Image (cartoon, rainbow, N blue to C red; front, side, top):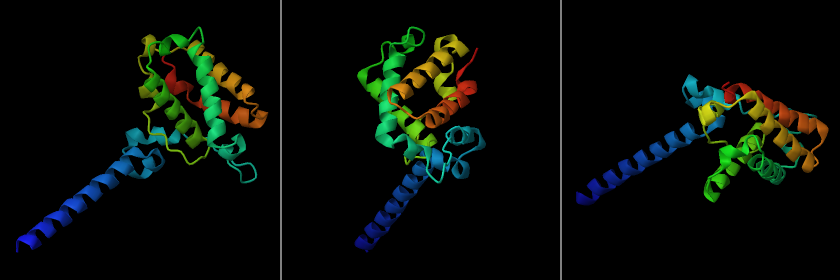
Amino acid sequence: MKIRSLSTKAFWLTLVCIAVMVVSIFRLSPSLAYSTTTPAAQPLAAEMTIATNHGGTSLYSRLGGYNAIAAVIDDTAKYVFNDPQIGKYFIGLSTNSKQRLRELLIDQFCQAAGGPCVYTGRTMKLSHSGIGGGLTNSEFNAFYNDVALALEENKVRQSEKYEVLKFVESLRSQIVEK
């Protein structure tokens, strides 16, 4: 009788653990946002899509995949951290914080380009609200130009460069506060 009772408890405990894992996965995955989250969270999934097809090939593939996107993000970070207008926002970040930011940006751009990555960060509006009293169009332009420089440095073709910069531009209204 005791063994049967323990087996039943173990069964229910396992079932609860599986249910918690499933719920956690659905809440964390932006790619599933439309079917599993509240309407307030839907813009996260909507802002992530720039993957247009040219002959059936995703932007992710045309850019060269994960490593190519990571290289562009690494060069963008180099420019941004040293940018006289926006570099001030990154002073004092630990190495770990910079690494986390890098991972989030790679995932964001990778997902937006139609790659296999899943962006798990906050919305752009939430991530940037209140920074320095509100980010300006001029500061956003500095970031945009830093991304453009990184794309040039990595010899990204003009059509793909245009698509990436179009995605960056699509974030302006969510980032600029004044």
